[in-house]
Length: 113
Length: 109
Image (cartoon, rainbow over all chains, first blue to last red):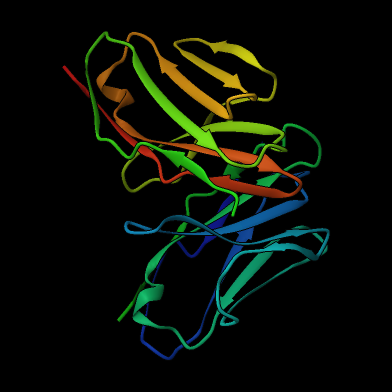
């Protein structure tokens, strides 16, 4: 099976702009989670989608949003970018049922200037 | 607050030694426990999961779980320089996956 894919891999944006990141899960996986990873904060949970519904949400401002499509592909959007949004954004997919292990994509490296 | 705590390290071991990585968690209802390895500049890679008390072995890796003590560990036997990475502990309960900050391991030749 193909792994989790994320596009684009690298992105440079300017403060105030918005950005959309895309994630395609492993075939058959219906749950998609998004994380932000920075050197100082580690891996921070953004949100999780299952069957097009947001099931769980982390402690991030409303500028961060996401959605999931009927084919389980997911997008996340960050509006009004700030310098502090520079990070590696990771998507992970999992099947329903124990042990609920997650498999990560390669990530999108976002730099905000 | 549901916490997952790891010693940030760095943990340094000589090649061929046993590396021991530890993780504690606060949510007693946690169902599944995972260890991920992350090389610098790469995404986390799942190396083991465990959900029953006791030991689980996979090659050079052994995961140990003690739910009463809320403690999970990872042992790496015959450590190799290629094992040098950050190891993330993750704990799952009810659609909620929590990650520790990671322990940086260096294996010296």
